[in-house]
Structures are given as C-alpha cells and as structure tokens.
Image (cartoon, rainbow, N blue to C red; front, side):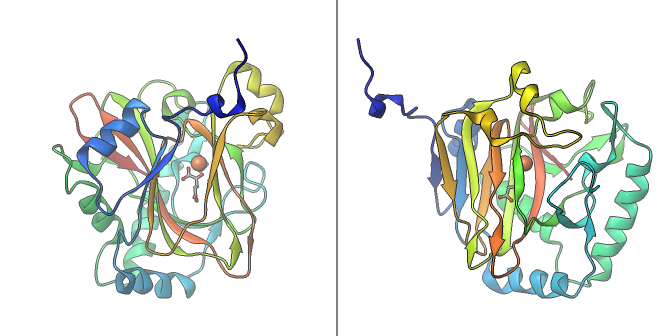
Length: 269
Ligand SMILES: O=C(O)CCC(=O)C(=O)O
Ligand SMILES: [Fe+2]
C-alpha cells in the first residue's frame, strides 16, 4: 500500500484558535488531541500596553550566553537559568526575590501574571496557582525578548530535573506565552511533531539548550505568527523554535504550567 503525502498529516497535530479557553481544550492539549491553543485578545489591549510601556523603559537581563545563543533578553527569573545537574540551584531563590522586586518597581496597576492565571482558570475546575518547591513559591513568570529567535528545543521539566520540580505530581506540561509586542516580520513560533528521543542528542548544539534544525528531519510542523494580546498555550515537549525578528521588538510574558494528578494547574517561571 502506498501512503500519499496527504495521509501523512496527523489530525491531532494542529493549533486551535478559540475566543474562550474551554476546559475541554485544555484537556485535549494534555491528552495530545491538539498541539497548541491560541486565544486572541486574551488580555485587553490597554492592559497589554500598560505592561509593554513599563517594560520598554526597563532594563532587561540576558540569559546565560553560553547556553542561550542567539542572545535572549529577559525581565524576571526563569528556573532554566538556575539548573545545576538536574537540581534547582540555591541562587534561584534570591533571583525569584529580585525578580518580584523588579516587577513591583514597574508599579503596574495590576499583576499581569496573576491576570493570566485567572484567565487560564476561568473554565478550569481546579485551581491555577504558582507552584511551590519545598514549600517555597516559585517565580510566577518572565518577560522574554528573543529578537534573534529561539533555537529548536523542547521543554520538559520531568526530564530536565531529577525528581519532582514542584511539590506535586505533574502529569502534563504546557508552555504559556502572552505576546505584548511583535515585530513587523519574522518572530514566528514553529512547532514540530517531534518529541525528544535519545538519538536526538547528536544534534545538540554544544553547551546549548538548542538543537540543530536537522533534529526534526521531515517531521510535520506548523508556524504561528503571533499578534499582540494573543495567548499561546502549547505542549513544549514538541520541538519548537522562534524565528528571528525583523523591525520591532518581540516581547512576551511567559511561564510553564504543569497539570497535577489532582487536577490543579501549577505554574512556574
Ligand atoms: O515565544 C514563543 O512563542 C515560544 C517560546 C518558547 O520557547 C516557550 O514558550 O517554551
Ligand atoms: Fe520553549
């Protein structure tokens, strides 16, 4: 039997666009019945602009340049920069505290991460809360500016950390982004229908979080050009990348989410 190219599409590998994030859609994402959920106008433009205006005047740090090249700028803390041999380095907790202070100093009229959690939880039966580790609250999220793009990579806390990252049993992981500013062109998010396997390590860029694009071979993919105010929730175990931006900054709020065995959604940055 010959398989025509059209049969090579996995009907569960697609991005759904929805005005409202439904409980069933989050369940489908966890179950692998879709690969991404886009919610346009997830946060009203006026609130996005308030955060963007504050961030534009703020000083961003860069991720560790050995591991993250091209350079990605960030405002706030990400635990991926504080991973040491599969553990959370002690310095993470001070970084979380500094990050809280830096966000508070922006003097916004609301907490954008709290608002995102509230929106995510509108139709979810369980709580959506910041995760804890050894009883301490993790970072709530970060603003990231990958103007040169993100290399092809995957995110999976259950592989990246030995033991449990949070004080909970995670059964699925999602990545969340709220786009505040997008470039005139470029800056697309690409997701491939390919999950890490041990042989992929031959494509690992030395010392990097990323892989050479050959790692995804001929895997099916889709490309999303984000709009300001849009939220993207996806399964980050699928390899993904962000294309370089041209003309304008690409700034998004981001955090990771884990679905627990008790039906809560716990986030961390
Ligand atoms: O900025 C994006 O669109 C995706 C960034 C990313 O790699 C992630 O959220 O895991
Ligand atoms: Fe990622």
